Length: 143
Image (cartoon, rainbow, N blue to C red; front, side, top):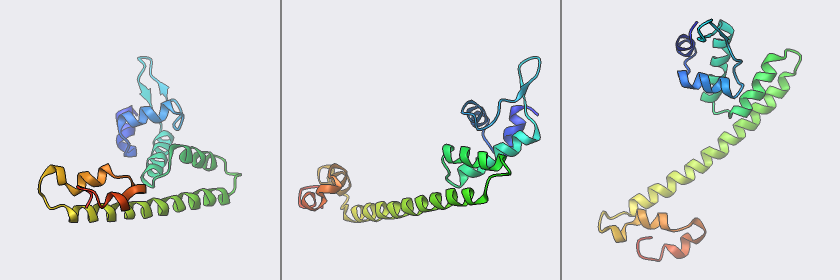
Protein backbone atom coordinates (compact mmCIF):
# COMPACT_ATOMS: atom_id res chain seq x y z
CA UNK A 1 0.00 0.00 0.00
CA UNK A 2 1.03 3.59 -0.61
CA UNK A 3 2.12 5.93 2.17
CA UNK A 4 -1.23 7.74 2.17
CA UNK A 5 -3.03 4.42 2.66
CA UNK A 6 -0.63 3.35 5.42
CA UNK A 7 -1.11 6.70 7.13
CA UNK A 8 -4.89 6.42 6.98
CA UNK A 9 -4.89 2.78 8.13
CA UNK A 10 -2.62 3.54 11.09
CA UNK A 11 -4.22 6.82 12.16
CA UNK A 12 -0.90 8.56 11.65
CA UNK A 13 -0.38 11.74 9.61
CA UNK A 14 1.48 11.20 6.33
CA UNK A 15 4.37 13.51 7.25
CA UNK A 16 4.62 11.78 10.63
CA UNK A 17 5.04 8.43 8.85
CA UNK A 18 8.02 9.90 6.99
CA UNK A 19 9.41 11.32 10.23
CA UNK A 20 9.12 7.97 12.05
CA UNK A 21 10.94 6.39 9.14
CA UNK A 22 13.73 9.01 9.29
CA UNK A 23 14.25 8.52 13.05
CA UNK A 24 14.24 4.73 12.73
CA UNK A 25 11.00 3.86 14.53
CA UNK A 26 9.62 2.39 11.32
CA UNK A 27 11.91 0.55 8.90
CA UNK A 28 12.38 2.02 5.45
CA UNK A 29 9.75 0.40 3.25
CA UNK A 30 10.35 -1.21 -0.09
CA UNK A 31 10.04 1.08 -3.09
CA UNK A 32 8.52 0.65 -6.49
CA UNK A 33 10.58 1.12 -9.63
CA UNK A 34 9.39 4.71 -9.75
CA UNK A 35 10.48 5.33 -6.14
CA UNK A 36 7.13 5.21 -4.33
CA UNK A 37 7.12 3.71 -0.86
CA UNK A 38 5.25 0.42 -0.51
CA UNK A 39 4.06 -0.44 3.00
CA UNK A 40 3.09 -3.88 4.25
CA UNK A 41 0.51 -4.69 6.92
CA UNK A 42 3.36 -5.17 9.43
CA UNK A 43 4.44 -1.57 8.79
CA UNK A 44 0.90 -0.35 9.48
CA UNK A 45 0.81 -2.34 12.72
CA UNK A 46 4.12 -0.83 13.79
CA UNK A 47 2.83 2.66 12.96
CA UNK A 48 -0.28 1.96 15.07
CA UNK A 49 1.98 0.84 17.94
CA UNK A 50 4.01 4.06 17.73
CA UNK A 51 0.89 6.22 17.34
CA UNK A 52 -0.78 4.60 20.35
CA UNK A 53 2.42 5.03 22.37
CA UNK A 54 2.43 8.74 21.53
CA UNK A 55 -1.26 8.99 22.51
CA UNK A 56 -0.29 7.56 25.90
CA UNK A 57 2.42 10.21 26.20
CA UNK A 58 5.48 8.01 25.75
CA UNK A 59 8.53 9.80 24.36
CA UNK A 60 10.06 8.60 21.12
CA UNK A 61 12.94 7.05 23.07
CA UNK A 62 10.50 5.23 25.36
CA UNK A 63 8.64 3.98 22.31
CA UNK A 64 11.93 2.85 20.80
CA UNK A 65 12.55 0.82 23.97
CA UNK A 66 9.02 -0.58 23.90
CA UNK A 67 9.48 -1.59 20.26
CA UNK A 68 12.71 -3.44 21.13
CA UNK A 69 10.87 -5.22 23.94
CA UNK A 70 7.96 -5.97 21.62
CA UNK A 71 10.23 -7.28 18.86
CA UNK A 72 12.17 -9.70 21.10
CA UNK A 73 9.89 -12.42 22.51
CA UNK A 74 12.68 -13.59 24.84
CA UNK A 75 12.70 -10.37 26.82
CA UNK A 76 10.76 -10.10 30.06
CA UNK A 77 7.42 -8.39 30.42
CA UNK A 78 8.88 -7.03 33.67
CA UNK A 79 10.97 -4.62 31.61
CA UNK A 80 7.83 -3.30 29.93
CA UNK A 81 6.13 -3.03 33.32
CA UNK A 82 9.06 -1.08 34.77
CA UNK A 83 9.11 1.36 31.85
CA UNK A 84 5.33 1.86 32.08
CA UNK A 85 5.51 2.47 35.84
CA UNK A 86 8.23 5.12 35.41
CA UNK A 87 6.13 6.76 32.71
CA UNK A 88 3.03 6.72 34.93
CA UNK A 89 5.00 8.38 37.75
CA UNK A 90 6.08 11.07 35.28
CA UNK A 91 2.46 11.59 34.20
CA UNK A 92 1.37 12.02 37.83
CA UNK A 93 4.14 14.59 38.38
CA UNK A 94 3.09 16.51 35.28
CA UNK A 95 -0.54 16.42 36.43
CA UNK A 96 0.49 17.93 39.78
CA UNK A 97 2.47 20.64 37.98
CA UNK A 98 -0.45 21.38 35.66
CA UNK A 99 -2.82 21.57 38.63
CA UNK A 100 -0.48 24.08 40.31
CA UNK A 101 -0.27 26.11 37.09
CA UNK A 102 -4.05 26.09 36.67
CA UNK A 103 -4.52 27.24 40.26
CA UNK A 104 -2.06 30.08 39.86
CA UNK A 105 -3.61 31.17 36.58
CA UNK A 106 -7.13 31.04 38.08
CA UNK A 107 -5.92 33.15 41.02
CA UNK A 108 -4.39 35.76 38.73
CA UNK A 109 -7.45 35.86 36.46
CA UNK A 110 -9.70 36.44 39.46
CA UNK A 111 -7.49 39.37 40.52
CA UNK A 112 -7.79 40.98 37.11
CA UNK A 113 -10.05 44.00 37.37
CA UNK A 114 -10.16 44.55 33.61
CA UNK A 115 -8.79 48.08 34.02
CA UNK A 116 -5.73 49.76 32.62
CA UNK A 117 -3.01 47.62 31.04
CA UNK A 118 -0.39 49.10 33.35
CA UNK A 119 -2.18 47.66 36.39
CA UNK A 120 -3.08 44.35 34.76
CA UNK A 121 -2.75 41.56 37.32
CA UNK A 122 -2.16 38.96 34.61
CA UNK A 123 0.68 40.87 32.97
CA UNK A 124 2.09 41.71 36.40
CA UNK A 125 2.12 38.04 37.37
CA UNK A 126 4.02 37.22 34.20
CA UNK A 127 6.65 39.84 35.08
CA UNK A 128 7.11 38.25 38.52
CA UNK A 129 9.17 35.15 39.07
CA UNK A 130 7.86 32.40 41.30
CA UNK A 131 10.91 32.96 43.56
CA UNK A 132 9.81 36.54 44.20
CA UNK A 133 6.03 36.12 44.12
CA UNK A 134 5.56 37.15 47.77
CA UNK A 135 7.50 40.41 47.42
CA UNK A 136 6.22 40.96 43.90
CA UNK A 137 2.58 40.67 45.01
CA UNK A 138 3.00 43.97 46.80
CA UNK A 139 4.03 45.80 43.63
CA UNK A 140 1.74 47.55 41.20
CA UNK A 141 0.28 45.10 38.69
CA UNK A 142 1.10 42.04 40.76
CA UNK A 143 -1.90 42.10 43.03
